[in-house]
Image (tube, rainbow, N blue to C red; front, side, top):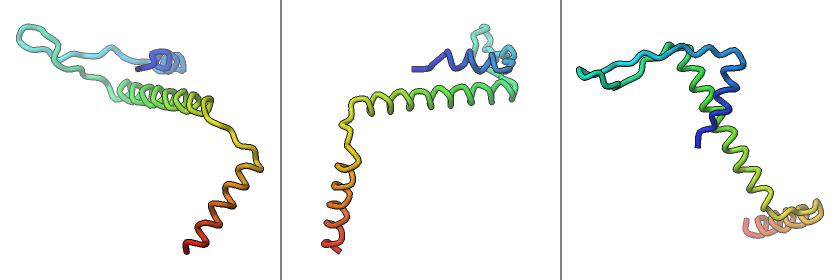
Length: 89
């Protein structure tokens, strides 16, 4: 889902999106959009920001549901893993 708040924030930071121009067919139906390069770049940046925000929220939710290990537990698991790899080698 696209986060329109990020696009609004992008514009508030000084982005000045110019009105798009449309390419139309013979009946006047819009077929394509022509954007100036600055607006296009701002839109790409806003989409990248939205993508980053999505992955942040997704990762945060994953961490919230994950089992946490103490330092001692993590160390013990790492040592066991390393020992098993040394034996296999």
